[in-house]
Image 1 (cartoon, one colour):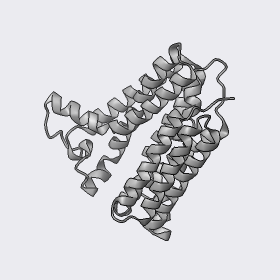
Image 2 (cartoon, one colour):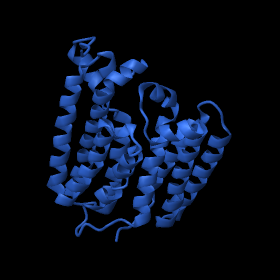
Image 3 (cartoon, one colour):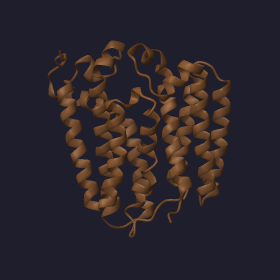
Image 4 (cartoon, helix red, strand yellow):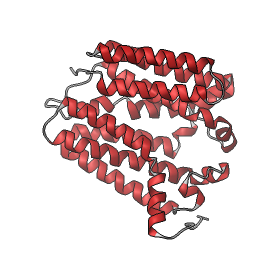
Length: 282
């Protein structure tokens, strides 16, 4: 039986809905897409709508995630999850997810059919992950499909819809997959207890938590190296790779939450280089 909202006031429900959307990851991905789209096509409807479309899509992903995970989050005692604590009803979160999904696809379709298809792949992969793939070996594939097409989505605003270099697409996919390993690292014990058995969790079950950390570092460093190959601005990508290597060394030698912080630091560096590295399309 669904738990009723703990506080029925509008302001508290609105705040709970905002928290359930995972706002910071949503804003970070939207900012990346906006920068890439503005560089690809600085004029016209593309840069105006691709950012809001991606934001609506990412909000729908966050709400879908919290609605799907509410029973599991409640069992794990995660007090930062509003749908799990009853701060907002699961039904309200689902309604918000579907409204945001429709808005995202409508805005993307206003840019072009290609833009809409690419956004549908990005959002669809994340929804599939939330709805069940997170507990299978295909959980990593959802992240590859959720991040890999982002450069192509941004470039779809250009006339002729050029395709980004393979190295840029591969780097974006590796950032997503590496982020997946990094994201689950602190929750391996809770995930095991609640039956979540995605790719990183199975790696951890077979070879230990250290293997999950190593995979995250290796994937993200590979993305850093590919970005150096693809970038037309070596003064951006070169220092980015150096910073990523330094953070990797810190992550390998550190203890406690240091490896987790270092891994996310590499992901952040990769995202910055991806946004500012001056990548071309073919």
